[in-house]
Image (cartoon, rainbow, N blue to C red; front, side, top):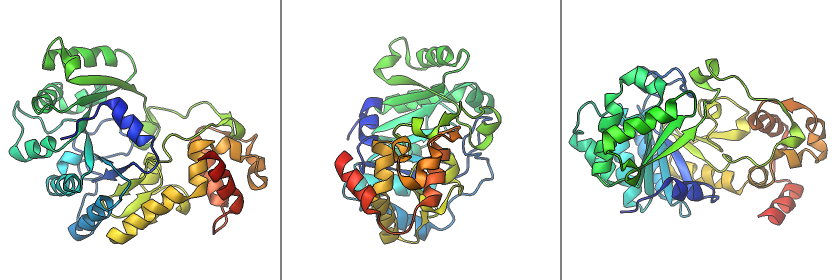
Length: 325
């Protein structure tokens, strides 16, 4: 079974077409104040399993995709859906990486179905910070870390770099896994995202002129939701239904999922956003007025450009994409 480090995963994610993210549920029981998708205990979840099976089949049939991330919400609230996805994807030869809060680790031993899921994974991203601790207590993080490490699966601990969070995360890892915890886990600092409930905690960043934005590092992160919505990137607001129509597509079966993913990957505009960035594209006549307009994020500029795109393939973008590929 493949085992992946954080750097391995970053390398795969930065290889166009090599990975996708499966968003299996909106639901999460933890209720963190900083949640970027506003997940709640009563949020929507999988109801159409025939559609979901088609989604998994569609992802499994993507020939260039070697790794599938699974997130939500909290993936482990979807016992049937998560098990179905992990089995189907690993049997198709895909490496699976799950993003979890560890809420499921109420005791030192996990239920057998969770052990079965974990055993098939290449890595587990486990989040901790003051918001997670407030929502589920400190014990579950330690239990989850020990269970995952017991399977020999690499753990990537994500913690927001604010206050003493990173130091507390190191202490929690040492308490759970011992002084040599780095043999089992990596600690990766993250930042708060101004989406979902997190918008109340993290305001927009500084405003830059359109021409100042470089390449987008998430435009290759195609996301497939449990309800058939495929988005070109992992912007949380786009996943939840916001943004211009050109950033997403609704699919009803495996063939439509594969086609949507392949179309987004082949799109010259999105390829250029990932290689030269939207700032460089402000030199084109239809975007020149955006060069000096100020935006709080690269997403705002992308959305404005996407709204202006004409239907059909643009030969100028095709030529530029060919030069920069």
